[in-house]
Length: 236
Image (cartoon, rainbow, N blue to C red; front, side, top):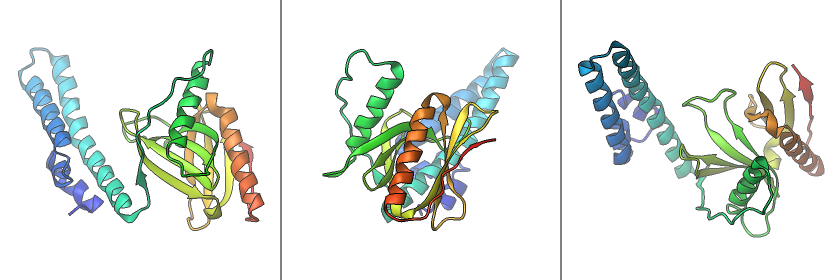
């Protein structure tokens, strides 16, 4: 009953997908949002407010279909062991006199360190998304290079560590860094040996140096293990 496609289909009935997943609080949020928006749409004396309420109904209705599908997919991956739940993190205060970006990097490093096993270390870290433009469908990750591969800590909508996924060096064939001329985001592509299409991650230009450090660290690790690779820093 938890198959992602089935959950997404049944979510056409608002909140039903979340109920089947046992996420009753989220189902209540969906119903409350729809009831309030629909009530405003019916009884608001202002035309502009009616329009906002109408679009809110559509966004909540179709949005919960997508998010219930995503939740079901993540649960399926958890059951298969493809991903694991992130450990809770209690961050220690950052050192004094750090810039805003340096404090963010410190937070990412501490969060990634909390997910590691004995003897593992974190190298370069950065914030990435799985889509070039932010939207309700965009997922955000702390990405870091560790001793055995690349670690991704997926963040919840509340910006808390949610899930952990690792990409071993032995599965990476090559990695590329791309810097499009007409874009506010840089792109990293991880070509995996058993997948036709690369994994794409996007980062803000402020993390350009960190992105290059990640690419260089992954490339060096691949080269050390004797796996074929090709690094490209392209202009598009």
